[in-house]
Length: 238
Image (tube, rainbow, N blue to C red; front, side):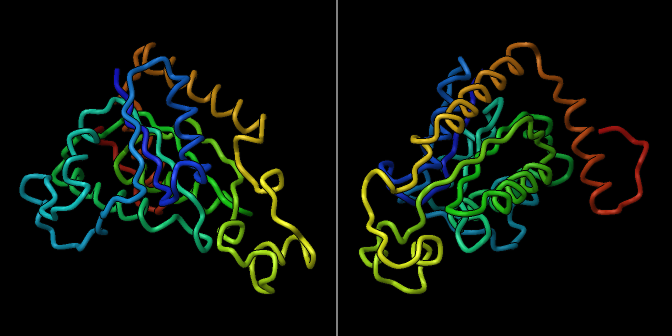
């Protein structure tokens, strides 16, 4: 069993709470995994050109191209993103948009595979969690658990966080706040969050090792998606 673990954060490893959580989940699965960071990668969003409709292969050539086989061959996913402007950050959004190439004409390469979502924010994580789950549902991927944690807003690193009157630090802490290593948020300082990531990884490993029923999972996700969108339920199974 092989897991594809993706950190969609554009930040360097030292500053990326998303990468830290994704890695913690992956390390505790007890399974082989590929850890991919999107930091520094050039991945264009879906253009809607429909060039993938004939063969389910995206025709755009960029840093996603060599990752396609990893996506297709993985038995499960750990998908991490962070909150930029109250939504999923752009690099992870573009990465997941390009999974559209797997959806045409009942192509079921991803259907029913289990996934864990990892969501990080300076203040909110829920917007990210919802979008990650939505992308999974579009591909009939079953989200079996999610991990959420709080990291540092960019204001902690920009060089002006202590004096800027419109930044996150001033909004939360007011005047006179001094940035130090100790008060800069990071998930690695949150024992409960890291333990949640650890246990989530172990549970994902158990799901894979105990024989995950992809057909049943895909059907459940499909029915849930149809219900959410108010579509008429069909009796035909996938």
